[in-house]
Structure formats: structure tokens, C-alpha cells
Length: 71
Image 1 (cartoon, rainbow, N blue to C red):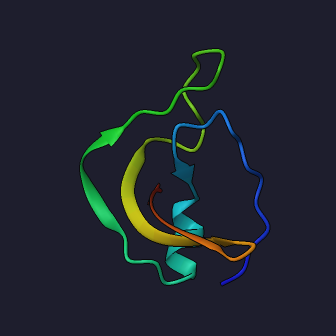
Image 2: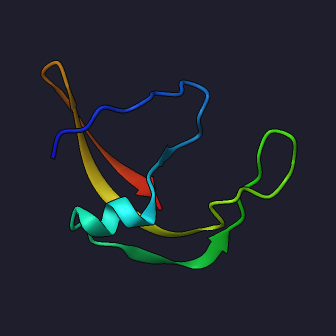
């Protein structure tokens, strides 16, 4: 699958919506404990907690990196 993404060099990880992960056939691994997500202003994120992890390969200009992503 090829997608256009916004890269955030300040982010602590890779994130995608659960809906996108399911629709694209990613294997979702349920986390033992959900991770609460807060916005910069400390309010709860409307997307809810991170509940799953997926394995992804990233390709960019001939480079490849295997990463864990959060859903």
C-alpha cells in the first residue's frame, strides 16, 4: 500500500487510525493495557486510547525501516 503522510519529527512513534489498519488488512496486536492519549492542552484526545500495535515497513527513496505502529 502506498500512502501520503504527514511526518512529525517531534512525535514519539508512528500512529494510524484503527479503521485504516483494519481496512488495509494489518494484523492488529492488542496491547495488555490501553495507552491514554492527551492533546497538547492536556485534554483527552477525541480518538480515544491506543489499544493495538501493528508491524509496518516504511520505504522512502530506496531506504527501508521496520517499525511498530500504534493504533
